[in-house]
Length: 89
Picture (spheres, rainbow, N blue to C red):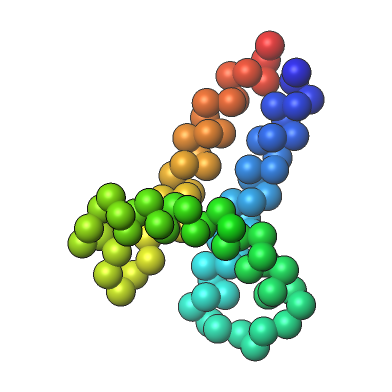
């Protein structure tokens, strides 16, 4: 059980790093290549439901700035806090 929780925590940590890189690259707008495309394919399927939820349930929040990465970071942080006590069982 401890190994599974550790792997899940590591996966969430890795996804957080990928999400951070994705947000940074969205500000710079580099030319599309295989790495940016791979990053988009990993991050967007998770961001889209969060973005859709925010558009539907929090009108006025989603203007010119996309808050879905921030919301996803909060959700990942909460998930990591919930599973961290399970590491010691």
